[in-house]
Image (cartoon, rainbow, N blue to C red; front, top):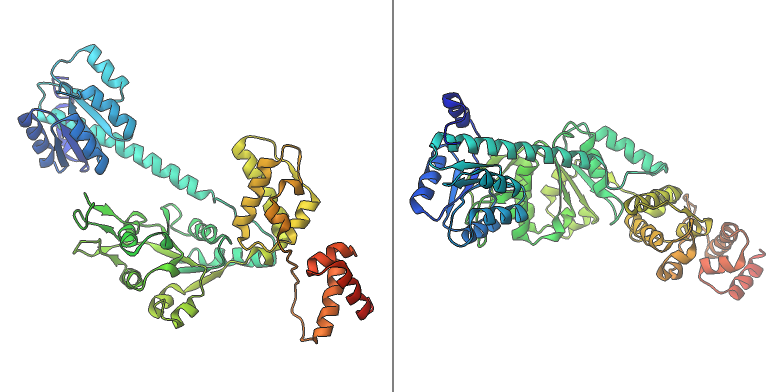
Length: 465
């Protein structure tokens, strides 16, 4: 390796390499600074460290693409540093520089995960070419990782299952609005599947080959949320050791999902409004406007009209987000889909634990069908996953459900609009309907109505039932 690989053409090719962030480690100041300067002149961002310990500290706080380290150093030598880097930062490429090149040295370095080694004395062109190849390898690895992430994103965490009329209508609406590039606002209770709908919008859009990124706006304070969305410049605040791109830049060409957008502070709403209107963002601590090409999908479980009237949400931002609206129905409005969803969650839980999927007894489905599901589909998933854990046979039975669920107040769902009736008519009609629902089981009917069996008998007698 003491001679250049590929001559002048190789050097020309190396000059075309995209800039990387490189850490140069050597306890000899002159050798370290010369190499760092030579790589910086090629357009790379270089950082120098005088020891292995200093290098590990810098790696902990910064995002580096590769490391060039001398082999023979006091304290932690190059091989020890290499092994520590591969243990803590396996994606960073490492080149070991040695003045004593032997077969054993090369074998040890390669076994420890080095990309290659560079023998002293070396020519700068040779070092540049090796850096180019190492960065190219890292770039390809990152592209493969990104492609794998996109493939995983194409598999929804929970498919939008359901044949209920409201779900059929919702899926048809998504298919219609997804190909356009307008902002979408998704409304619905917690656990109804707002992120699933957002991912469907992305997958059916022209942006489906790009990234889908999501953030829960209620999980960050104002300062952190601004940094997450717009990024920050080096030194913008305490702890900002280097420049960081925000989600608007990271989702370039794709879709950015803002969950719980109603939790944003008024100050953050102003900054988001500017990004939506101008299609530009400004990093925290920065002065330059950066153009972004991102489709926004927002979601909230709040009534934004009420929030606007109360002065907690800006009207101008509401109008910007409220272009196309998707309403996610609560689970109690689509209970006919419950058996399908329950079965899906059983099979999903069993796939993850590599075990046969048990059946679901009719009693369990009846209990679930009378439950209010305040947590909606997400709560159903949790209930089923718990039941699968406790089920050791071939069927999930009531004994596998939690005591809280079995003791919870039962919820009777009635479909259709009714004309106004007197209280007496309402009571008679409710008792009659509940008896029919309970197949004339008066014990069950009294439980559904929230009264004891004796009270039910007296009311039935009064109403002639």
